[in-house]
Image (cartoon, rainbow, N blue to C red; front, side, top):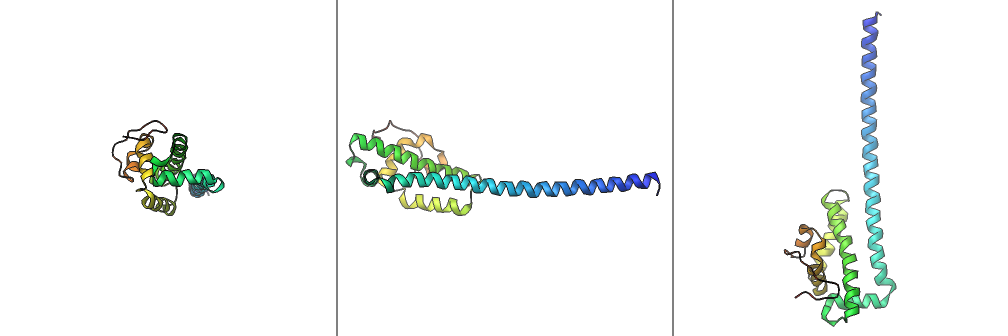
Length: 161
């Protein structure tokens, strides 16, 4: 074997090594992306559980949440602030899921379950009031799920006119 043939063989082996390295890196990146997506989804679920825990662990908070959704006018000023903040926290999690789902970061199954939950509750008077009052926090596409086109707002505890 002369020097030219050895050089060609070395170049070929180097090319195969580069290709193998690229395949390995692609597999690792894909695996890492799946792991990251899973961790993001788990973090969102943990936030959802925190909001729900407030309702489960505190009967008064659950009562304010229920009454606020059914008839926001039945809440006193302090309860109204409590309801507004609880709804904002609740909707922040929904918005995050919507946003992450739109970007393909969380599973379609998780996004669809959230959209179904929104469809089932979007006509509640308290939720409508809360969304109208805090719509400026959320994307226009998210607000459209609630039939809200104008993104204005009000201060905590106020009922929009």
